[in-house]
Amino acid sequence: MNTEDILIKYQGVNIDQKEYNILSDINFELHKGEFVYLIGKVGSGKSSFLKTIYGEMDVSCGDAWVMGENMRTIKPRHIAALRRKLGIIFQDFQLLTDRSVYDNLEFVLRATGWKNKREIQNRISEVLNMVGMDNKGYKMPCELSGGEQQRIVIARAILNKPSIILADEPTGNLDIETGRNIMTLLHEICRQGSAIIMTTHNLNFLNEFPGITYVCKEHQFTKQM
Image (cartoon, rainbow, N blue to C red):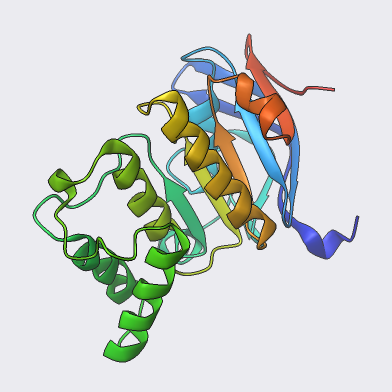
């Protein structure tokens, strides 16, 4: 594998919270276009691992590189720039409830430096079409189903064509069929070039939508063979 394809590289990484060790001796690489699952019980460290990637939690030892940034020494002012290269999908959506779907997406683009109104309109139309929500831009989040809201969250995550998408239990609050539709969409986005790391408790997805699997268990982070 070409080293230029490596987006994340962790070697001997520990994640601690105060005196408590969450995960030890993490060795992990993410390459362009890979789909990676993180599985494990609630509280096993899956979300904590994701948080170290976007600078919400610190790495306590080891080497940790994300998109060329050293996460041990990264300055706070550089974290915002790193996050603009990532797409983050939350289980609880985190949409702005007082704004329409279109306005939610426009807010993100303007916050990340987009200024041209026509380019903003075109990009929003493009991502809404990609997630099958091209006729929902005028809707308020409360007018959408859970599955529709998750599609909007995915649209928001791919606005800036990120190299990495982090998806924390993106199907956790959805029924089985809607969850399967979201998985199909995520794998299509992965085929188009974004690497995806997804936490899940639904082990059926691992067979139906194959990927690389890592297990968080008893403070260890291991690749499932």
